[in-house]
Length: 249
Image (cartoon, rainbow, N blue to C red; front, side, top):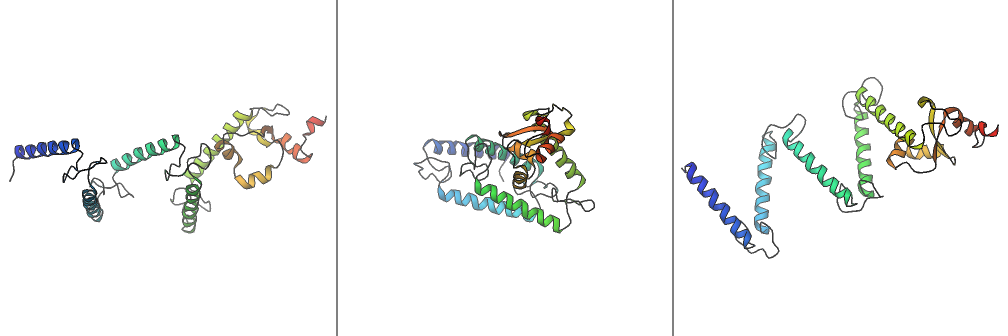
């Protein structure tokens, strides 16, 4: 049985051996030469990966966090500390990938357009996964947004509906602040009356393609070809072949 002093001596000597091997560009475990650098040779890497896989499998079978062995968070495999650490690391990786103009999900392909977070393939896969999850939740009678129990016949629970309404309100206000906080025709400034109009028409077809117009404008950086009109001027323009009745007077 080793004493604490003897264990400390062993750890110190092992650390010195590893540092000396690293200085000689050797594997830190078996001293095999590593001309291309690195910490371990391929054989030691495989052994280490196998040990780690066994440790993780044992921890999972015992109902513990596979990373550190602590009690997992409710509804997760990992503990709360490890989840927070993973979240921070993943956010850093995604940020660096976006700064380089590559897909934040796969890190291989370029973004499908400037400023987009993912490539075309990852974007389609994300949408497919989201649609599949939403269909499964709807079939089970759960909220399609968070998976919790929904109230009544609504597809979303009250909390998700409130969150979605707040998101759409922020998108609408952002569009109005960008395109103008007053009607471009009559000068109406009441926010409740203002809408976004397609200058060259075709609004119905465009909304069928993109869904919510305010969210689409915000995601795409507020492109040109849109203006702010009040509800009366917008409807009058629709009924009079693209010309508001105010402009004919």
